[in-house]
Image 1: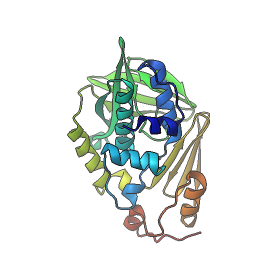
Image 2: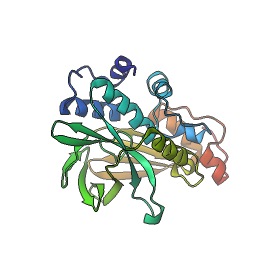
Image 3: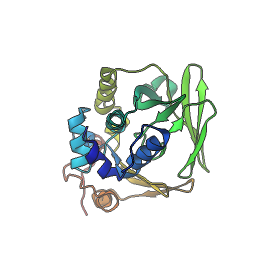
Length: 266
């Protein structure tokens, strides 16, 4: 793990001990530095979880990724610092329950007598800082209030803002192997009904504002409020450059091919 390069990229200098303070600093810095995006999928590429590939993508190319990429890289960072992260897979609670499946990755971090939930890969409405893994734990971050509860043998992370109160995802405490993660990553990145193939998304997270591009919509989260702005499809590539510094290819993306759209350019 190129820890020195990573710390320079996220702007963290103090990582002397694997304690809660260090975990908080690294978690928040990662969230505010790297984009959540699925450009590799949308350009027909393969998602690699090999550490060298992730470091090249995040540290050298200035890119981001989705949950499996973010949390695999972050787990490597934590191990290098001296933590002992445990990989767990979760189900995003979106759509009918019979279609929920383990397409999300989180990290369980033991620190002293406590265990913490770390997740730098859930996109715009996800945690900015880690949470202590305790029934009834709550945390207000960037205009959202997060809460943890048990649902049978499962943990559930919920989020509330001024307009809604929703469950984000569930996960159990059984640890996953690297090949469990590879299977989930392959399904999520290649299945034709995966949201990541049906939707282009680029997201930036900050404490004051979270900005999300999904196909033809820009969503901004500020102080617990949500503001949506519809885009003319012809402005998609210009907006990606202006808001996120991302240059999209001129050729059609996967979601454009599926919908029969032809990219028009401004």
